[in-house]
Length: 240
Ligand SMILES: [Zn+2]
Ligand SMILES: [Zn+2]
Ligand SMILES: [Zn+2]
Image (cartoon, rainbow, N blue to C red; front, side, top):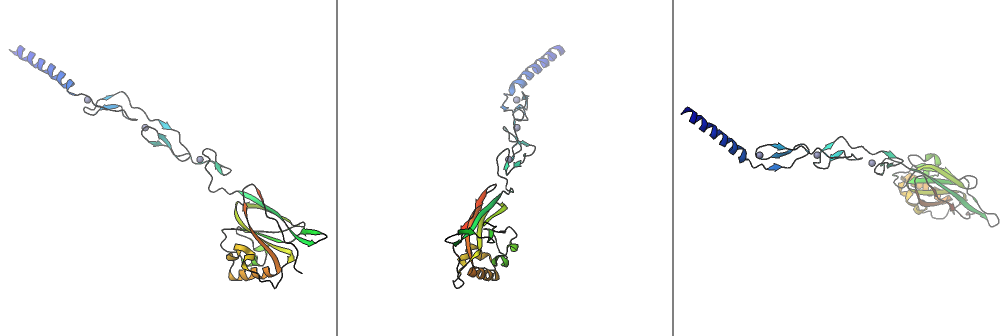
């Protein structure tokens, strides 16, 4: 009797075991970068994890897995040379390029000799975003040119050069040295162009005083990096 019972129990266990194994119809969730395919029902795993598939870091992004998006490390950062990133060609926002302004200022001496260099003519180069101009500039004094404002005087043949000018938009004001204007002429603000608005009241008075005597020419110029721009002018004959 004991033997029969033991056989029955053994049989039951055997069937029970088979039944147990057969009850899980595995439902595999796909393998991920870090986990193998896993049965959602019983937790059994099969195969291996995919492993991350990192794309190279760029100037602005770290190494990034193309499958799961996980990042590692840090972005490379831009490597600027001469104003541009050697990897991605991004413009360096802090890079300043310098250019040059040259020109020749002349006036008409007479019909026989013709034109001569306006030696001593004052050339002001004023950034268009200038907020205020020193009063002394209204008097044509080059020593007052500072804080991004450039000034020079025409040389023996009327030529001048201003070097190391940051690229940008500028106003040019030229005050003749060898030609006078008619003092009774009403000098208007336009003589100095838009720069007149950068002066204080005293500076404006100075500028108008200068404009009554010396001929003045104003204009605009764009300075490009590593290039030379030209601003030349002939004042014609002087008022006698
Ligand atoms: Zn399972
Ligand atoms: Zn991944
Ligand atoms: Zn870059």
